[in-house]
Image (tube, rainbow, N blue to C red):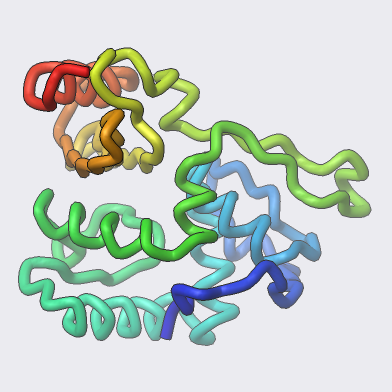
Length: 212
């Protein structure tokens, strides 16, 4: 039911043979390709690939619906009472919801898993070569393409994940570390511009965290 916090670097290969896993207008890099699960995880986190989340859901649970049930079971195990999932990607549904506080709890948990922490801290990553892409595919973080991470001056943003739907607006969960090693998690939502969550995070960290 999810990733072991001590997960290693070896993952099974996954085959997606149908465009059905890739929502229209998504980046579709996994369609009709064979990729290492690690690459698909980067595809989930860096460019927010909904096709990648669907592929993982099908691989792990057989369907996205069953995977959402596993997500809800995990949320319950974590003590989350205001979070409910109906899909793997976060696309809008009235029954798919969470709160900033509980998103922060999920991020704190995710950062305890070395591989996930590594992925969420990455600016760019090149996937393994495939027949369709012999040089691999360059994936870029939607978080770190919009900030360097050191703009606040009193901390460094070391990890982050953006999100967007028309209903939720531009959202960001980020992790900042101060020079003394303390870490802070910030969740912002409902911003109206692509870069706004990053600017908001920088301003909040600068205002509320101790001076360096």
